[in-house]
Structures are given as C-alpha cells and as structure tokens.
Image 1 (cartoon, rainbow, N blue to C red):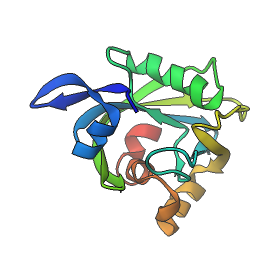
Image 2 (image 1 turned 90 degrees about the vertical axis):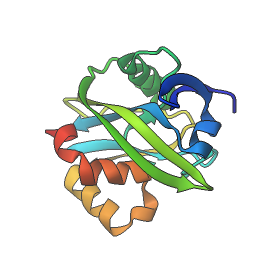
Image 3 (image 1 turned 30 degrees about the horizontal axis):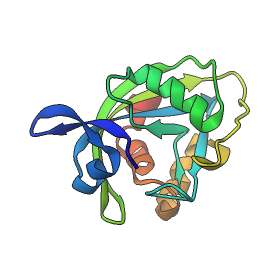
Length: 171
C-alpha cells in the first residue's frame, strides 16, 4: 500500500502513507457520503480484501482524499470508483472528528467532511468488487436498530455517525 493521504503530524498537515497513518492513529482527512431516498439510506458492505473492517457494513461511501483534493471532488470520485454512481448532487452537511479502533491494531482518527445526496428513487449501483461486496437500501430507523443490536456487523464509524452525529448529518 503506497497511497499518501493528508494527516497531521506535530500540528502540521503533511502527506503520510495510508497504512502508517492508521498504525499510528494520526488525525487525517476523510470524506463520507450518505445517499438517501425518502427514509431509506444506501449502505455498502466492504470487500473482504480491504485491509481493515472487511465484510462490515458502512455508509454509502467513505474514503480519504488525495493530497490537495477538494472534499466534494473526492466524494464524487469515490462514488464513481466504489459504486459506479455518477451525477449526484452532494450537500456538505458537517465536518466532524472521531477516533475508533478498526482491528489489527489500526485506528481511524478522522476529520471527516460528510456529504448527503437525496434522490427521488433508489439508484442502481455497479460496485467495484475490490471495494464493495454488496449494497442495500435500508430504512433509516431499521439501520439504527440493526447497528444497536448487532454492532459487530457494522463499521465503527457508521455506529459513531448514527449515535453521535445523526442530527447534523440527516436534519
């Protein structure tokens, strides 16, 4: 893994190798997207080849921007790369920070720009199998319930978003 992502080291934003960022638990930039259709939300199950949280359900799309990449451009790019989705209007909802262990001694410590896209009907996806093994549309209330009942099936960041930031993301 050789991707460089924006992370803070000694108070300075610098480009750091992605796996090193997660091993050291460095605060770094991230982007998350939720696509909503009425009360339903599009979620994805992460591919088994992912180096952390493989096979767990997450929000529609999440990633780290490239060095110097605008968060909205990053969100648009990753929707296309992960799910084959284009043409959505993204609304910036919040910039939040969280820290969570994600297994194997790795830590996500992210400053996340969160975007929401509201669509009139459920959109089709064409998941990249290296990134996503499954997608599903789930009623938001049902998703809250599922994450509370079986948190082991969901990424830590999704649980944090729902428990701590739902009002700012979905209002």
